[in-house]
Image (cartoon, rainbow, N blue to C red; front, side, top):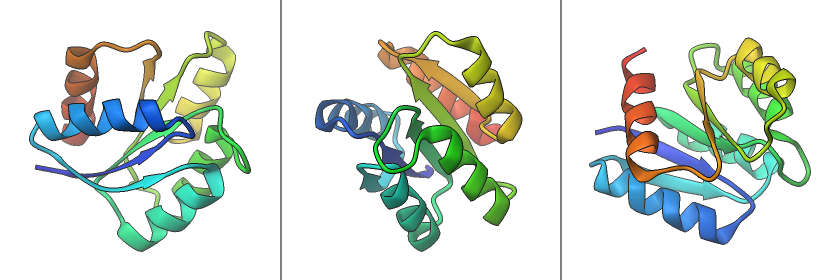
Length: 120
């Protein structure tokens, strides 16, 4: 069972992800609503995994990935995005994200990627 921080500016997406994480027998230890909030909560909570939305207020997902990886090089981050811009996804992966999930996502897909990422 892993501790997971969920970061998304959408209440509905955070709720769906929380349900998926808990059904997968993991624990949601916090939720963040923007990029700055994500960095603050990640530093406080030090989760096993961060589920991170790309498009957020204050700091976007790429900036958050870069800042967290600079502080915590072994951080496990899964990018969640509705964007189909492969260049920005590749940049996030090159900056330290371990994987990504495309919106709209499926329940089983999210659990599979979480489990695979935790094993890395």
